[in-house]
Length: 470
Image (tube, rainbow, N blue to C red; front, top):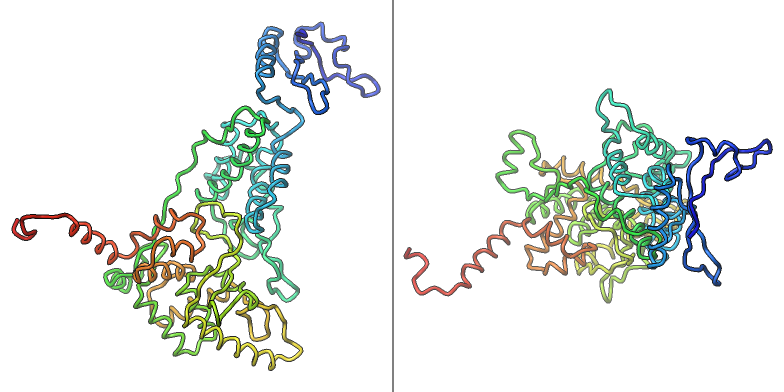
């Protein structure tokens, strides 16, 4: 076994490193100790003798040399000093061949905005729990740093990466949205005073990406353990939907305060909204009806194409899934799901097709053939923000209890539950990646269902004495 070697980074007049030949190495505080040990042969049987160091003393170097040699002999991972965490993240994401586009975008965003600027310079084998904790602490300080506090170097790097990130939307010379760039949702867009701290859920999503990358490094024997397994993350406060009951509606009318961030209409109020759309001859009524009854996300509804629909035989549509802000699990590799629309939706969509053909004739050469089901009168794609803005305007004009357009998705789940649809079928229809998420969120949404379950449980217990006699 080779002895430790003292080296330094001094250079000669030509700029060449002196290494072991520096005359200053005789001085006690000059240079440091390095060791080399025998590793298992590389590809083709090539001999490998990795360097390790630096060490302050020869005793410390000798002690670590024996440890490294024992680990190498036992087949444990051999550290690659030239592989940084940033390099590994690039290799890892490049190797994920089966990710759907939206999932890849979210992974790359986590790497670009947090993983690489925060820890990309650290050697892969040196990344530890402390590094990850520091990263997540800095993420929690974005737009949330106490007044007068100085940002850490970690936080400065994250802020610089976010400042260099592209806008979420690219726009043409008329200000119309061209393409969603899918940058971080919390990056304030120019012209908007919207600087929100990162949520605990977002920090957890970034952690899952980095943890997966580190897990692969461990499985492929590039590191000795996955430090992400022992990191304590900020707790995510679960926001459960609340139903607009008569009592809550009365209180809202008195105070103007909405009981919770996620509110759901019961079937009766959903029906009033749809009736209002018909009465107002709302152009987007078929879209709102589809979202209310089938639970599509806004981006999914705006992105459906005629070529992916069958309104006569199977009465289904193929939906390209988008990220669900309520689902805390990473998306699965499946990009598409089939949604049965039912007779009423099929009729509405067929009528919409006829209307769209009339609009195409009226537009003439100005028609833009996007192939989308729901379009503007000139065939261009609907602006998703407009779909939400129009929805909110109708709700306000009708005096209905306020909900977001995304909450129509929860309304659909609630209506399906009230109609007796199985929870697993609801999960598939909504496109959730985990059945457990669906059950966890919606089991307590409809009080009537919860009450019926309680009564059924009590009724199943055999009793000799009549229940009302005691």
